[in-house]
Every structure is written in structure tokens, then in C-alpha cells.
Length: 346
Image (tube, rainbow, N blue to C red; front, side, top):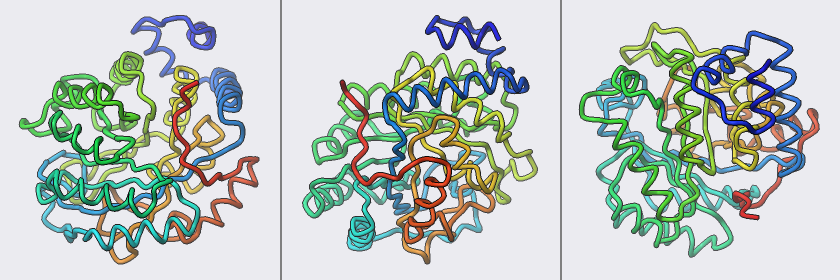
């Protein structure tokens, strides 16, 4: 309980204290205390509002071979696709009619989508929907590339660091990728003025409490505007196919910790959380999250963007069923709001 009290009071924790704080998820009393504080803090800054983002998974081609990912370059059974600019704009148009004012363009690191192509897509979205925010989630690029995309109108960028421990990073990624470059990207994005999102998987193979403590320390240093975490879920076509799924209770515990550490952060109740447990997103909101990202992608491709087994791609996850989500959140005392949902600067 000492670590929880220090966290709530705003004191700086040592690495060992972060480790003990992570492991305190097994203590119901600590979980309850932290959750109560997280909900209070979120209410102070966002009330009972939940922001919605329209997720457009526009390509599942990827040059990388991340060992946990179901669309990595080595997955031979993945049905690959790319959306055209016209298809992306149609997704945005459908989403706009449903009330979405943020579009998240997410894809693998697809070399087909050059800076010029992405700039054209961003410019077209901004031209057609000038009151909307654009979030990109398209991986590692150089500073000049990020700068071009920002000048074209991109507002936010999601790039999970996945793990802040060098040794653990190498267990999850091929030799051509590095934690140092991932961190470089995040700091470049911050310097360029993006609203930046980082994050990690909970329960990824060989992950320890010590690793998660390092994640919390890195996030404290980076101070991002958005943090995405979700339980690790294996994919049948990867080397981690037989690994155990990440713990939902630990994920919820970490959401409360992150809300307390970063009072204004935009914190999603992720699709992975909803996949791991049927009411996972609702529980995520009750733990301090304030963002959900329903899927605007064309229905014919939703199953092809398979990052992990049984990923939600129909039913309440689809944007067309936003009313069902609205009712679910209303039943737990929260309200979906239709605006950009920017990080507060005051």
C-alpha cells in the first residue's frame, strides 16, 4: 500500500517501488484504492465523456517481422490488401455521418505508401473534413518524413514502444529493429508538435514486472499525450502461437496507474481488452480510460487485419453499431461524445 500512497501523492517512485506497485494488482484493497483515485482524476479533466476515434486499417502489408504480430512479413497465410485513397475517403465520409471527428489511419510499415502518397491522403481528408483530427499509426519513419506528414495536416501519431527493456525488445523483434530507433521516433514526433502516443503489451512473452516498471519509467520520461496498452493475445501464425494470453486484471490495474501518473492522458480502452474479455472495454473505462476506437474499415477487409487471434471485427466493434456502444457506456454512467477529443493544453 505504501507504493500506492506515494503514487497518489505525486511522489517519485524508485524502480523497485514501481515493481511492487505493478505486482500489487493481486491485492484487492490496493486495486480498489487506485481505481477510485483514477476515476476521480479522469472525472476532473474529462467528466463522464468517452471520446470515439474512427479506426481505418488501410493496409496490412508490413516490411517488419515482429514476432508477435499476425500481419508481420513472415506470415504466409495473411490475405494482404491496400485501400485506395477513394476507399479511405469513403470510410471517413461514413464515419463523419456517424459523428466521428477523429480518423485513425493505421497500417503496417508498407513501403508502397510513400511520403507523397500519405501526404496526398492527409490533404484530401483535411480538405473534405476540415473540422476533423487525423491520427497516424504507420510505424517508424525518419524525421523528414514525420515533418512532411505534420505539415500536410496530421495531428497525432501512435507508435507503441512495446517494451522499454532492451533485452526484452530483442526477444520480441528481429535483429533489424531496435529499441533505440523506436525511442528516437517518439522523441522526433514530440519535437515536431504531434500529439504523441506510446504504449506496450501486457503479458507479452517473457515479460516481467521489472520490464513493466521500466515501461512506466520510460513513459514518465517521454510524457506522451496518449498511451495505449492491452493484453498480449497470441496469433496462430507466429512463433508465439502457443504463448499464454496477457492478464486482463493486470491490464486494468495498469490503466489506473497510468491515469494517476498522467492525469490528462488520452487513454484507450483497447480492442485487445475487448477481445480478451467480453466486457473488457467497459471495465477499461471504469478503470480510468476515456477513449474507444470503433472500426471504420471496409467490412470485407476487417478480418484480414488480424494482429492476434479472434480480434473483434464485427458486432459492437464496428462503427455501424456505435449506438450499441453508446448504450453500453450509458449503462455504466458514461457518455460517448462526438468531437475531436484533443489533449487538453490548459
